[in-house]
Image (cartoon, rainbow, N blue to C red):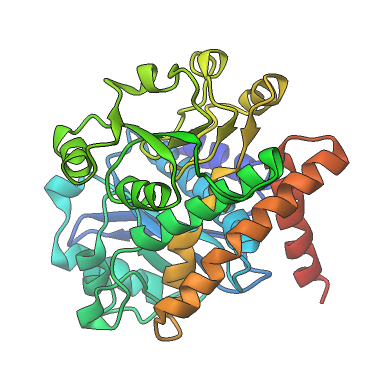
Length: 360
């Protein structure tokens, strides 16, 4: 345990991945709850971010994930124009085996003990129904069902925001914010991806899709027989004449194997953590592939859960998500002016907003 503690403390106090304001270790023996809540930066307001329920191999791995995810939320929330800082929580364990109502209630009490410094929501392994349970012990809970005062599924606005990012990419690269006549490949047509396909088709795009789940593909092709299906992602990214690639499934989609064979000139999708490692962004730039940073364009979901705290209004949320278009253009302009990749430009803009808030 000493080695784990020393590793965590070194990360917090002496590394670029640290700098967090607060990290809370939570345990409830009666329910088996083991959780980590990390607050990265609250200069803009209370930390906002989901709760991930995952069977981590080690406690150290869980802490590292909470630190990385909360830091990412600081940047996402800043660029989304929200008055929230970055927070994230992880619950250690297989949700299929240990998730119970009692465990979620115990977790809710720990979140409530922070007095509003952290606002939680859904993430991998947690769902709207889970947030309804957590909310029984903690009023700083969002992502709840409409029956319990929440907004429900956030995939509609997430897809809408990604579409705005695509429009901005088209404006920047081709001088026109329309996808009409463009060939767009969507990898992953689940909750977010199938909404994105609808936006693209309505705008006149030619769409190619792939998904490991046959039922997800079938749902789209039955409604839209004009949509082309690629056998897998590997084939999709090699599609001749592809203008835009939209990774909407797992992270790490842009890596040393995929980038060299990518035919698209733009990457803009809903998946989190698309860059397998920092060097990939330079590889994209070297191939003249425009990358719309994932945490910028997929912010529609966090915009929705933040709005829920004030009494959810879909039109108000959609108006905020529409601004992803302007934010994406601002990032591309900053990247060009500073001679840096778009993700680095996005980081600079987010850091500037957080710094200005700290100095007020």
